[in-house]
Image (spheres, rainbow, N blue to C red):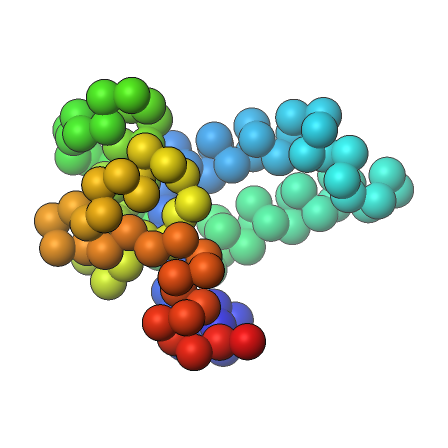
Amino acid sequence: MWRRDEVSVVTSEVIIAKTEEVLRRSHVFNLFPPARAEARVQGLLKLLRDQAIRTPHALDLRIVEDDPEDDNILIAAVEGKANFILSGDTHLKKLGTYQDIPILSPAEFVVQHKLS
């Protein structure tokens, strides 16, 4: 959907940096074919930097007490005027919505957009 311009991805440099950190964790990095792992990580990061809407990360929100890093997702969504947040994160899912932005699991997104 993203590549067909049916949805836009909203992110920030803070989120991209965290994404890189997670992708480089051995249990994730080792999921990629060994000869292509670094290229896959760099390709994803380039895609996010080049094609996603990047927000300035200027808001100071403190909403998710149990996992303050999750506030970065809320900040990007608010600054980017997102229509929804797509996440399976339990702390974010507990919120349900934030500033009228629904927080959907991937499965909920698929059902609501009738994807298969």
